Structure formats: C-alpha cells, structure tokens
Image (cartoon, rainbow, N blue to C red; front, side):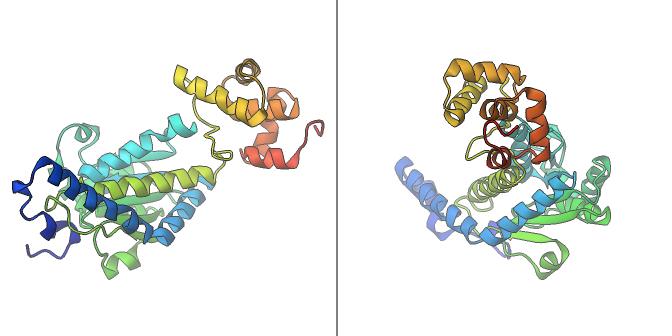
Length: 303
C-alpha cells in the first residue's frame, strides 16, 4: 500500500488473519495492544507539556477544546463529557467537537472530515479565543476538518496542538505549540484506527485531562474531591472519601456533606477545621480550590 502514513501500512503479522482461529485472533490483537502503552510512554515529555498548556488555559479562564472526526472525534467528546461528573467542572471547561456534529457519535458521517471550512466554522461558533487551548486529534495526521479548525483557532489567538499516530511533518512541528505523535505501528486490520490508534488516543486524552484537573485542585491525594454526588453511587463514594480523609464515621460524613450542600471540598474543610460552610468556602477560594493548601496552612483551632 503506497501510503507514508503508519496508520495506513499493512501489518505483516495479520496478513493471513482471515484463516485464524478465534483464540489466534485474540492472541494476535492482544500482542499488538501491548505495544500501545510503550508507544504512549515514548511521548511522555510531549504529553506533560500538553498538560501544562491545558493547565495554563484553565488558570487564565480558558478552555480545553478537542477537535476530531470519526473515532478520534468520538473519543474527544467522550473524554470531555466525563469531566463534569468526575471533577465537578463546568461543562464548558472541556469541549469535544466532532465533524458532523453530535449525530456523528452514533452514526457514521465520515465525509464531514474532508471540509477544513467546517472545522474553521466550529471555532467561530465556539468563540475560541486567546485563553483557550485547542487540541486536534487525527490518527492519520491529515484530517482536513481538524487542520481547518486548528488554523482558525490559531488565527483567533488560541494555542494549538495536534495528537496523531503517524510521523509528524516538519510543517506540523513548526505550526503547532505541541505535537504528540503516538507511533503504535500498523493496525491489525489495515487502516482501522479504531484499534491501536484509538486505544492510544484514549490513553493520552485521559492523561491530559486528568493531569490538568489534578494541577487545578480537582483532586486531593488521589480522591476526586470535586465530583458531583448526584446519584447513590457517587453519594456513597463522597461519604467514603470524607470518612477516609477525616477519619470520622459515615453518619458524621453524611452530615458534613449535607451542610456543605453536596460540596465535598467544603465538607472536608469544615470537618478538618471545625468551621462553617461560608468560612470553609472562603479559605478554599483563597487557596485556589486546593484542599491540600488549606490543610497545609491551617490546623484545627487556627481559624
């Protein structure tokens, strides 16, 4: 196959897979999937830099905006949609844009990826600005919709990055603030980037968004202390967090969360320092929302 993109190369290990048994297919795909984590690890510095760029955007009042098509776009929307329930973030803080709109999440609209003009229009509709960071996701590296969006975002003053699964061109390296190239190699099914490339993309997006949330105070220790406790499972998780961190019983934890109107960080600060919700909120605001900073600054009885 005469195509320079790694995502379009033919994998010699799967060239006769149509004659494999079910177990041989499982073993083949599993062997290939083991390569993904190592490929992600080789881009650790670039991923860390991306976390810093996203964090800078959040601190400046900006957003993280994913732009993609097909599998790449769906993974971006998925990661964005998981931020509010996990970290209690504003739904506008992390946005996912997919070529073809939200209908493309459940039905194929792959032809939409061919229009750079439509990608640019999405940036205008989102009112992308200088405080935002826009990450294009294109496994093949060539999706016109994505590059059209990135060009317009850059023109509007936003910082831009590209996540791809093939060797980046010199143009890309010069053009974008960051390029993350996860070289997972040829897919088991030639060109099927929903496989290794998709797995790699999800790993990278999880790492970027989680890292930025940690660095903006959404996590205490390894607890998601900004989660929305709006269902039984999450309420139970919230109570267990308060029990573990403050070393109180569940009834006391539940009472603190109720007094804090469901805000776990306020509940923790109240319980730790023996203060009311308004004072707890004030201390958290002064600490930029970091529970750790409040706990490090104050002992019970200090306020």
